[in-house]
Amino acid sequence: MEILITTTRNQPPTASSFHDAARSLGHNVSYLYPESNLETQINQVEQSSKKLIVPLYTALNYCDDDLALLKTSFGGPENHFLNSPESLLKVRGKEKQIKLFSQLGLPVIESLVIEEDPNKKMNELTSLYNKSKKLIIKPFRSNNGIGIQLITEMSKAIELLEEQYKKKDQRYLIQPFIEHAYELRILYHQGKALLAYRKFSNAGSFLNNLSSGATSAKVKTSEIPIDITNNVKSIQQTTGLNYFACDFIVSNDSYWLMEVNTSPGLIKTSALYSKDLAKEVLKHEIK
Image (cartoon, rainbow, N blue to C red):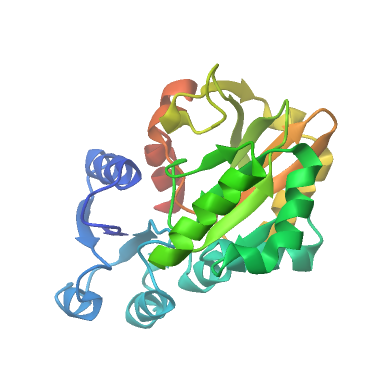
C-alpha cells in the first residue's frame, strides 16, 4: 500500500514519525504539501494503487479548499483516510472548535476572541481578568505553546493586544488562568481511547506542553472519569474523527475541554509508553 502524508515542507516531527513507521512496515511513502500547488502535486500521484491518506494538518497549513480537493481526488472506495476531509473540516481552527463545543454543551473555559481594537471589548476583558487576576493570551496561529503568554496585570494585557492590533498581526484567544491545574490528554483511535496521560508544568513555567519541558505521567484509560469519556465520545460521534487527541484542563473536581488535536505529537508519548505509536496506528489502519 502507498501512504500519502499531507503536511508542511518543514517536516514536523509527527509527519516524520508516520513516515518512518510506514517505511519500517514495508510501505511506500509520499508527501503532499499544502503550501505549494496541491492540485499539481495530486495530478502527479499514481492513481492505480490503493492508498492510505494521512492528513497531518493544523489550522495553520490547510484551508478548507485543500481538504475538499483531497476528498475529490482520493475519495474513492479503493482509498482510505486516517481522518476524512469532512471530519477535519468540522474542527479546523479554534473558532470552529469553540462553536462545536458550545453546540454539544461541553464544559469549556470562558473565552474571548480579539482581532480588533481591544478597547472596544474592555468590559469583556475586565470580566475575564477579574475571575483569576491572570489572563492567558494565545495567538490563533500557534501550536506547541509557542507565543502563549501569562499576563498578571490588566494594563499589560491591553498594551500587548493594542500593539498587535496596530500591526494587524493576528487574532488572539483570551482566557482566565486556572490555578493548580494539570492537562489531561486522551489519544483516541477507531472509536476508543488508545491511551491517556497527565501533563504538569514545571517550576517557573505555566505551560503544560511536553515540547516546553512539561512532565508527563501515564493514566489508565479505565481511570478516565466517565464524564470526560462521554465528552470525547460525543466529539467523535459528531465529527466522525477516527484519530485525534482531546486535551482537558483539570483542577480539583472540575474540568474543561481545551481543544481537539488531529495531529498530536507522538515522539514523547511513544517514549512515555515505550512503543512506536505511529506504527501501532498504521497497523490498525492497514488491513
